[in-house]
Image (cartoon, rainbow, N blue to C red; front, side):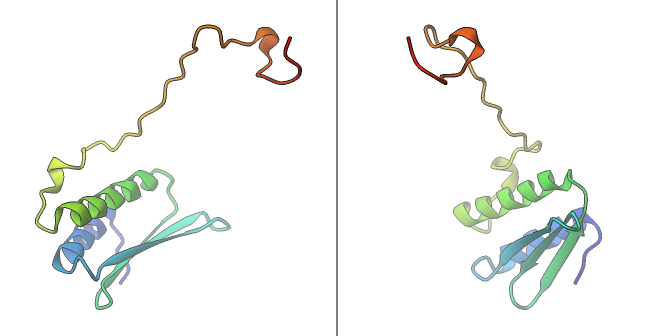
Length: 114
């Protein structure tokens, strides 16, 4: 069944996984020609589907993925709030230059060394 709201889809997917954790799986499909992302969660009895064309919904998909990982590792009775942060932000790697590694002339290691 197609679910229009992400919040309803997320809640129903969580309930489905908690009820049958060994049988539940989810599949993602991205169609580049349409720019649409489809997410399907099923336990072979109930099938939930959600479709979007919004790029910001990828963060929501990441949150669903984290939910399934936490429930898989810690069991179906785990309190997800203890393991999944509310704001799923990606950590950025800060590049720091090490002394003596700066290249001269703006070249990045190309060409002959002197």
